[in-house]
Amino acid sequence: MAVLEDMGDYLEAEGVGTQGSTIFLGEIPDSPDACTALYLYSGGPSVQAMGLAVGKSVVDFPRLHVEGRATTLAAAEARVQAVYDELHNLGSVTINTTVYKSITALQRPFQLGVDQNERHLVACNFEVARDGG
Image (cartoon, rainbow, N blue to C red):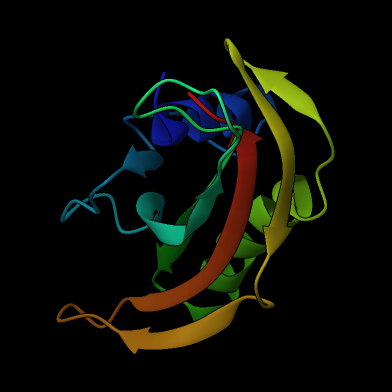
């Protein structure tokens, strides 16, 4: 299963929100005003080992970008802080069928500004270490 789906499932199970309603994967729709979006972006190189098949790795390091949106800055900050509180320094955990060795925030939640509808945007980025494929 893909990282975004795993993170969405984990955050939903932890009560952060509901996928398709307040948590969105790979997009931030025009509505609702208050929501959280998860995006995958390039991380560090995978750890390789001798004898692995082509295209396989020991550990992968994808990165996760989280954006929270709301009509007030405090509410947007709270959305991203909730994700930060669940994921930062998360130790080894299996989500669906993938073993995640660690998840670490690259910084504290920060303000991005406002969108075209004057809704506040706050973000945070995470480095993920998971078993390679």
